[in-house]
Length: 448
Ligand code: PFF
Image (cartoon, rainbow, N blue to C red; front, side):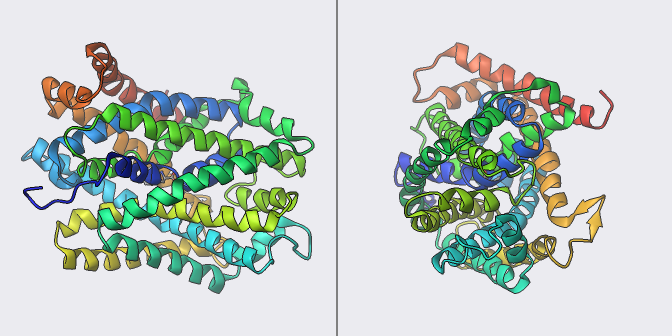
C-alpha cells in the first residue's frame, strides 16, 4: 500500500482474526456461567436475538468506520467528526479494552494452570473426587495462578509486538479450526451422558417467566462482549481490510461462527452440569468444574482434556491479542519501536490492574466493593455498563457523522444485497439499537 500500512494478506486472514477476537472466553467460559445464573434458556434466547439483530448491525457499523477511514479508532473518529469530542469513543474503547484484558488474562492464567496440571495428571483424579473443591484450592494458590497470569500476558505481548499480519493472522488460521473439531467431540460425549437431556432443556427451553431487566441487560452485555463490540476493536481490524471486500459477508461469517461456538459450548457444559448433579449457577468457576468431570467419562479423557485446554488457550489468546492490539495501534502508529514499547508498557500495566482480580478468589475474597468481589465488579462494569455505552454511542455516531450515500456504498460494496437491506440496517442502527440499550439501562435502574 502506498502509505506503508499493512493490509490483511487474505480475506480469510481477516475473518479468522476478527472471529478469533470474537470467539474466546465469552462463548466458552462466560456464556455458560451467566446463562447458568440468569435464567438458562430464556437468557440464551434473548442473547441470540440481540446477537443476530443488534450485534450484526453494530459489527457492520464498526466495520464501516474502520474500512472507510483506514485508520485506528481515535484517528478514525477525528477524521469523521473533526473538531468534536467524538474521538472520546476511541479513548473509551482503550479503557474498556484494558479493563477487559485485566480479568480476561486472569482467566487465561487459570486455563494455563489447568493445562499444565492436566499434563501432570493432577486434574482428572483429585483426591477428594470433588472438582469444585479442586478449583477453589487451585485458585487460592496465588503464586501458581499469579505466575500463569503473567505468562499469559507475556505471550500476548510477544505476539502483538510482532505486528498485525505476521502474528495474529498466522496464529488464528491454525487454532480456530482445531477448536471446532474438539468441541464437536466434546458435545457428542456430553449429550450421551446419563441425564444429559435435562441440561439441554435448561439451556434451550426458554422459561420467559424468569426474565427481568437484569437478564435483559446481561444478555445485551453478553452479546456485545462475545462479538467484541463497543470497544472499537472491529474498527481497528477492518481498518486493515482492502476496499474490495464485502463487509456483509465478513460480518455474517463472524456472527455465524460465534453463535455456533456459543451453542456448542452450552451443549457441552449443561448436560455435564445435570449429569453430575452440579449447580448451573455456580458462577465463573462453572466450566472449570464441569469440563474435567465430563472429560473423565471419556476414553482417553485426559488427553482430550489437555488438547481442549490448549485450544481454549489459543482461542483466549486470539481475543487477548485484539484487546492489546487496540491499545498498541492507538499509541504506536506504524513505528515498530514504539509498537514494542507500547505493547510492553500497556501489557504490564494491564497485568497489574488484573492482580486484585486474581486475588479476589484468594486473599481478597472478603474485600467487597458495592457488595461483590473485585473480579466480578470489573467484569460487571465492562460487560454491562461500558460495552453497552460504547455500542450506544457507535450506533448514534454512524448515521450522524457519515452521510447516507457513503454508508450505503461501504455497506453494500462487493455484496449482492440491495437498498432494502441498507434501509433495514439503518433502522436497526439508528433506532432499535439505541432504544434497546437505553431501555435496558432504565429498567435496571428502576426508572422504566
Ligand atoms: N469477544 C471476546 C470473547 O468473547 O471472549 C472477548 C472480547 C474481546 C470482548 C475483545 C471485547 C473485546 F473488545
